[in-house]
Image 1 (cartoon, rainbow, N blue to C red):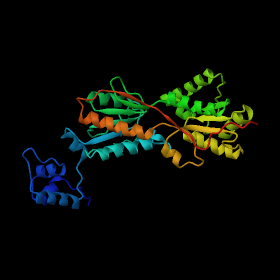
Image 2: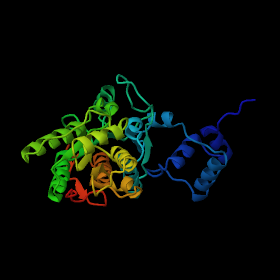
Image 3: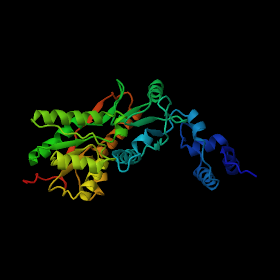
Image 4: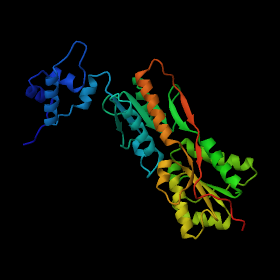
Length: 343
């Protein structure tokens, strides 16, 4: 015989009270002329616990103006790569929301959606945080319903709020560091081809800034056509042995880790013969050895600020104006960059 999940009526029957009383107690909606004795409240809570009662979230959201639910959109594409910045971002989002004590729950969408599908959940939400991007139907639905939202590390429509790192400033900072060490043969390795198709702004911003800064300083830009993750050893043989590169700025930490591994296999000492640095964050870099010199994208700050801005939109909607917050990136010098060898 198939068992059925306990419902509101089951809790009410065992507690000896009405379904509306159970609903108010479980949803903490006492007041406004409605009150119950503490012993009744405790009895209802205890019976609900013993029965393992869970409210139907979708049905519940249809009857409530505020669901106390915040939904993070874009988990599938953003959290797929090991140790990327979005894991730090999501951790800090939930940290801020939990610390405010306003009773919000956070859900993360990890499903893979087609470009013409909405990524919105079946239940009502009070706010949304978008990791980098969402589908057009998703944004249309958010705007139509007037749901507060913040985009992290991606563009927001006109009138929307976003928090983004300054990749142009960060790339300039990286090249300044390498040039001040004395490097003149500096290569840049873009992300793998499969990520180039995504078209994130950081891909163009970092590469175009690299090209502009090299030209500005009278240096020849060096970008290999080989895929940094698929042909790493061939790429290094071309850059280091043939083109005499002494420093490489990599798009991300996975590319940099592959370069370090390939350098070890080819007996290219780092940083004595080759300096390597990348764009990354503190969390991913803490577990790396040797410690990579990197441009910190400020993922913790992005997550914290986005959560704060969203909560302000939800709780003080009349006082909040849309804004685009651009955060400076910072240089963190560790053990993979040094002046070029005189030989």
